Amino acid sequence: MARPRCAICGAPAVVYLRYARMALCREHFREHLLRRVEGVLTRAGLLRRGARIVAAVSGGKDSSTLLDLLAELSRSYGLQVYPLHIDLGIGEYSAHLRRAVERLVSRLGLPLILVEVRRVLRGDGVPEFARRAGRPTCSVCGMVKRYVMNAAAEALGADAIATGHNADDAIAYIVKAFIGQDEEQMAKWLPYTPPSGGAVARVRPLYEVYERYALLYAIVNRIPFTHEECPYRARNSMEDTIKEMFNRLEEQHPGLKIGFLRRFSKKRSAEGVPGPVNRCRICGAPSQGEVCSFCRLTERVYGEPLGPEMRRAVAEAVEKALGVSSGSGRGRASAPPQGSS
Amino acid sequence: MVRVVLLPEGRVVELGRRRMRVDELLRELGLSVESAVVLRGDEPLFDWEVVGEDEEVRVMRAVSGG
Ligand SMILES: [Zn+2]
Ligand SMILES: [Zn+2]
Image (cartoon, rainbow over all chains, first blue to last red):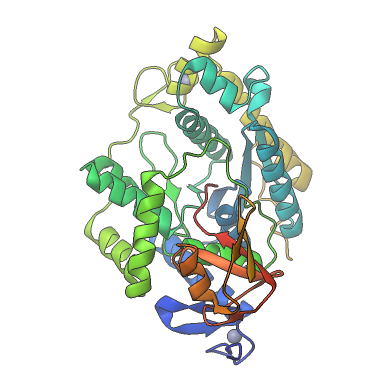
């Protein structure tokens, strides 16, 4: 059978969207995903000139696709997009991710905010830190990432932190939380979580983008990314099984996943989701308790709370990124030039 | 025979059939068509495209941590 033509312009198609029963060329596939991202940003009040968005970019397919799309929107709408990469110090894996991110930002002409956890954690990467703390690697990793992302967003005075979570991720977390009847967790998985108690707002622009299409987008646009798996990633997790289940359902009922997420997010709002209420008395980061978990855990492992040091390192990374591009090197300085590709 | 390289882990699987459609190939691997991308070289294939004899394709699973 011949390769299909784009439903919009007739050019050779690169993708067939089963849920839309439509083949699209590279250009219109890009348009299609941009509309999805715009939808989320509009509803979050973020699609406006001067909105400052920190894009957390790991070097995997989702966040790399996201950054590429956000860079395009920064050109058309005047958003200020600040890519942030956290080098978690997970051996070769982290090195590959970092290299992918560096290639991507240089292609997009964006300055990179690069935070290396080893510099603060006394030479430890996240796995060593977790081992010393006697805690699961993934939970420590999540905690460190949240801490750094929020610190960077605060240093920048950003309106939101954008993460690469896609539709399949959201479904997996929602269904898992539903199984556990954990309403609080469920309410977190909306496209937008407003700021609360010092925690900067979160936006998930790929909320209506299927994982498969985030991957396809990265492939057909030759976006640098790493497809490697984290060596600490749990295999056959409940999330993976839920994803596979929903993909089978999607095969039988194209559009089921998006329909589910739309109904889910229509029914609830993120208002009233309890966020952190305090500021850590040591480092000032938003925290549930008097001392934040980063300060608490680092104090236990290294003998002193490293929150203040991490916040300084993040602020320096922000200044370095902005300084390189703006020449002035002030923390909340002017926007970086949003490059053209 | 169709040679399949499964990514990200790089495991190689050989499927005994001579020719098959991409969606059949994924089904034989126990994967949903929604959860993977099949590549010939660097080019993603459509579900209905046929993978021929003695061909090597790469299957990238979309579900992976990042
Ligand atoms: Zn087209
Ligand atoms: Zn603290």
